[in-house]
Length: 115
Image (tube, rainbow, N blue to C red):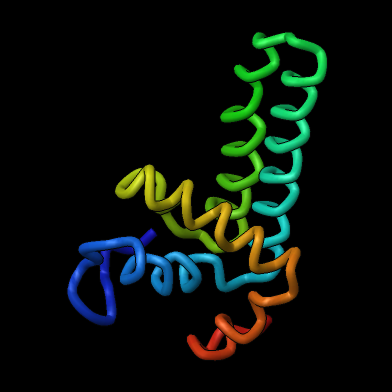
Protein backbone atom coordinates (compact mmCIF):
# COMPACT_ATOMS: atom_id res chain seq x y z
CA UNK A 1 0.00 0.00 0.00
CA UNK A 2 1.38 3.36 -0.82
CA UNK A 3 0.88 6.03 1.76
CA UNK A 4 0.07 8.61 -0.92
CA UNK A 5 -3.45 9.90 -1.21
CA UNK A 6 -4.88 12.04 -3.97
CA UNK A 7 -6.02 14.38 -1.21
CA UNK A 8 -5.12 14.61 2.45
CA UNK A 9 -4.87 11.37 4.43
CA UNK A 10 -8.28 10.11 5.54
CA UNK A 11 -9.78 11.48 8.70
CA UNK A 12 -12.86 9.25 8.66
CA UNK A 13 -14.12 6.10 7.00
CA UNK A 14 -15.97 8.01 4.26
CA UNK A 15 -12.70 9.56 3.08
CA UNK A 16 -10.82 6.26 3.51
CA UNK A 17 -13.13 4.02 1.47
CA UNK A 18 -12.32 5.48 -2.00
CA UNK A 19 -8.64 4.99 -1.23
CA UNK A 20 -9.38 1.45 -0.08
CA UNK A 21 -11.07 0.69 -3.38
CA UNK A 22 -8.12 2.10 -5.34
CA UNK A 23 -5.82 -0.23 -3.41
CA UNK A 24 -8.04 -3.12 -4.64
CA UNK A 25 -8.15 -2.12 -8.29
CA UNK A 26 -7.25 -5.54 -9.71
CA UNK A 27 -10.29 -7.85 -9.98
CA UNK A 28 -8.24 -10.89 -8.89
CA UNK A 29 -7.21 -9.11 -5.70
CA UNK A 30 -10.87 -8.29 -5.00
CA UNK A 31 -11.84 -11.90 -5.77
CA UNK A 32 -9.30 -13.18 -3.25
CA UNK A 33 -10.79 -10.80 -0.68
CA UNK A 34 -14.28 -12.13 -1.44
CA UNK A 35 -13.09 -15.72 -0.97
CA UNK A 36 -11.46 -14.88 2.35
CA UNK A 37 -14.44 -12.87 3.60
CA UNK A 38 -16.87 -15.63 2.57
CA UNK A 39 -14.79 -18.18 4.48
CA UNK A 40 -14.62 -15.88 7.51
CA UNK A 41 -18.41 -15.62 7.52
CA UNK A 42 -18.73 -19.40 7.09
CA UNK A 43 -16.36 -19.99 10.01
CA UNK A 44 -18.37 -17.61 12.21
CA UNK A 45 -21.61 -19.40 11.29
CA UNK A 46 -20.01 -22.80 11.94
CA UNK A 47 -18.75 -21.62 15.33
CA UNK A 48 -22.20 -20.36 16.28
CA UNK A 49 -23.93 -23.50 14.97
CA UNK A 50 -21.60 -25.97 16.67
CA UNK A 51 -20.79 -23.92 19.75
CA UNK A 52 -17.08 -24.43 19.03
CA UNK A 53 -15.52 -21.09 19.90
CA UNK A 54 -12.11 -22.48 18.93
CA UNK A 55 -13.14 -22.14 15.26
CA UNK A 56 -12.99 -18.37 15.68
CA UNK A 57 -9.17 -18.51 15.75
CA UNK A 58 -9.27 -19.46 12.07
CA UNK A 59 -11.13 -16.30 11.02
CA UNK A 60 -8.17 -13.88 10.89
CA UNK A 61 -5.85 -16.54 9.48
CA UNK A 62 -8.17 -17.34 6.58
CA UNK A 63 -9.26 -13.77 5.95
CA UNK A 64 -5.79 -12.27 5.98
CA UNK A 65 -4.24 -15.13 4.01
CA UNK A 66 -6.38 -14.52 0.93
CA UNK A 67 -6.23 -10.73 1.24
CA UNK A 68 -2.47 -10.60 1.63
CA UNK A 69 -1.87 -12.98 -1.28
CA UNK A 70 -3.86 -10.51 -3.37
CA UNK A 71 -1.86 -7.54 -2.18
CA UNK A 72 1.65 -9.01 -2.23
CA UNK A 73 1.36 -11.00 -5.48
CA UNK A 74 -1.38 -9.30 -7.52
CA UNK A 75 -1.61 -5.62 -6.52
CA UNK A 76 2.00 -5.53 -5.29
CA UNK A 77 1.08 -3.03 -2.60
CA UNK A 78 1.06 -2.91 1.18
CA UNK A 79 -2.25 -3.98 2.76
CA UNK A 80 -4.24 -1.09 4.23
CA UNK A 81 -4.65 -3.12 7.41
CA UNK A 82 -1.04 -2.31 8.36
CA UNK A 83 -1.86 1.41 8.62
CA UNK A 84 -5.62 1.49 9.22
CA UNK A 85 -6.65 -1.88 10.71
CA UNK A 86 -10.22 -1.05 11.73
CA UNK A 87 -11.06 1.00 8.65
CA UNK A 88 -9.53 -1.73 6.51
CA UNK A 89 -11.69 -4.40 8.13
CA UNK A 90 -14.79 -2.23 7.68
CA UNK A 91 -13.71 -1.50 4.09
CA UNK A 92 -13.38 -5.20 3.34
CA UNK A 93 -16.89 -5.94 4.53
CA UNK A 94 -18.32 -2.89 2.76
CA UNK A 95 -16.61 -3.88 -0.50
CA UNK A 96 -17.84 -7.47 -0.05
CA UNK A 97 -21.46 -6.51 0.58
CA UNK A 98 -21.45 -3.97 -2.26
CA UNK A 99 -20.14 -6.74 -4.51
CA UNK A 100 -22.66 -9.41 -3.50
CA UNK A 101 -25.54 -6.92 -3.82
CA UNK A 102 -24.37 -5.78 -7.27
CA UNK A 103 -23.63 -2.21 -6.16
CA UNK A 104 -19.83 -2.17 -6.31
CA UNK A 105 -19.49 -1.54 -10.05
CA UNK A 106 -20.75 2.06 -10.03
CA UNK A 107 -18.43 2.95 -7.14
CA UNK A 108 -15.45 1.49 -8.99
CA UNK A 109 -16.44 3.25 -12.20
CA UNK A 110 -16.69 6.59 -10.40
CA UNK A 111 -13.08 6.11 -9.23
CA UNK A 112 -11.90 5.06 -12.70
CA UNK A 113 -11.38 1.44 -11.68
CA UNK A 114 -12.31 -1.32 -14.12
CA UNK A 115 -14.95 -3.57 -12.56
